[in-house]
Amino acid sequence: MSQIPVIPLGDVLLVSIQGELHDAMALSLQNDVTMAIEQHGARGVIIDISAVDMVDSFLGRVLAEIAACSRLLGADTVVVGMRPAVAITLVELGLTLPELRTARTVADAAALLGLWVPFQTPRTSTAPPEEIDGGSGTRDVS
Image (cartoon, rainbow, N blue to C red; front, side):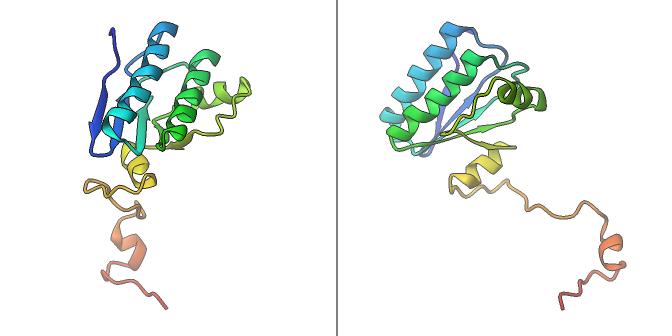
C-alpha cells in the first residue's frame, strides 16, 4: 500500500485505513485529506480505522491534526471502527483528540454528519417479538 485512497461521496470524504501506517504515509494522508477537502468542497471526513490494530502516539497526533485541519477548512471529522485496544492505547498515551469525533460504524458517522443513510437500520431490541410483546405483535405504549 503506497497511498491511502480518499474517496469523495457527495460532500463527504471516506478514508479507509487498511493495516498499519508508517510515518511518511500518515503525513501523506494528512496532506491528501486536506487537499481533497478543498478540491471537493467536502463538509465531512469519515476515517475508518477498523483494520488498524495499533495506534502509536504519532498516528494519534496525525489523526488529531487531520481533524484540526479539516475543522479549519469547514469540515467535521469522524473516526469509525476504533478497536478497544486502540482506544485504551490512546487514553494511556494521554491523547485527548479534542477536534475528533468518533462513531462505531460508517453509517453512524454519516448520521453524525447529518447525511441520510438508506442502509442504516434503526437500533431496536435484539429480543424476538414474542419476548417484547408476548407474541401479540403490538406494544403497549401507555
